[in-house]
Length: 52
Image (cartoon, rainbow, N blue to C red):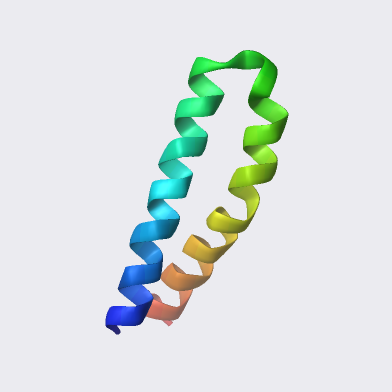
């Protein structure tokens, strides 16, 4: 369980960085979306595994 939570915390930090990039720098939104795709998928899978 601690491994899942540890990975989740790092993933959430990456998602937070993506949100900051999207809100702050309009020209870099596509790069932020690409950067945030995998962490979003990982967070979704983690939540699904914890709930299911």
